[in-house]
Amino acid sequence: MLAKKDRRIILAALVLFLTGQPLIFANIPLDTANKGTSVVVKKGTHLPGVARLLKQDELVRSSTLFMAYSLIVHRGKVIAGEYELSKTLSIADIASRMASGQRKVYTLRIVEGYNLQAVGDALEKSGIMESRAFFGLAKDQKFLQRVGIPADTLEGYLAPETYYFSKETDVDALLEKIVRRTISFFDREEVKTRMTQINMSPHEVLTLASMIEKEARMEEEKGLISAVFHNRLQNGMSLDCDPTVMYGVGMDSRPLNRADLAAPTAYNTYRLKGLPRGPICSPSRSSLMAALHPAASDVLYFVSRNDGSHVFSRRIEEHNHFVTMYQKKTKKP
Image (tube, rainbow, N blue to C red; front, side, top):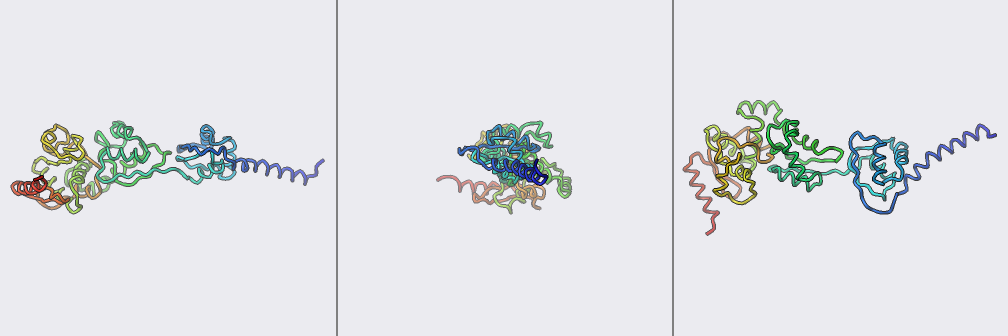
């Protein structure tokens, strides 16, 4: 019969053996093939669910072994996210990556002046989602109501910024986060006060700011361009904004023609009085501030000098003179 001391030694050896087995086998790769697999661990997924996912994708030889190793070495810690894995990685490698959160992160940059088409292209190029799926969500009435947008699309509500995205989060949650950033600007007390003073809603300010964004090439002119639009609104004049007409007919860069100017769209500010239906792009913070705080001026017209700057006028005769002057410079001999 074994002595008490001997039994303790054997028991300790057995424990070491059983503990060591997962550590040994967990460091052996499943295969030498280097074919990558993308695995997405959603938020709230527990260790058994992660183990089943890895076994299902044939990335581990045993889900039990993965759980045992993860519990022994990392206390079962798994950070949600998208992981690029392959069979050349051992269980130890995979568990280590998931415990430390070595996830694949996507970057989305929304630039000032981007419209929905440009945002959709950026989303697809970054690998976050296909542009077609984005356009469907951008016009989904249930989603728009959920995030509190009083419009028929997300146009103008996607705040310019660089965003980082990992696929444990749903794409609609990312878009909602971006929209909330825009809405939060209008929740500031000083902004609310100013909107009351100029009698404009957040949607109207966004719309006007998007027009300023598209018209202005120089930051220092934004206040004057805003003044032109505010003055024309107060005088009951049409806004005559070329970028809104272009948006309404789906143009990119070709010159406007008479048919465009006569097109009966909700964005044709030559035919309609007041603001168009909604924003035509995502405006910058400076354009939003210009829309709220126009320059103290009674100008009613502006025309491009074709170098990024504009000439501003108070009278139509003066404006027509500058139009003729700068249009002649652009005409071919």
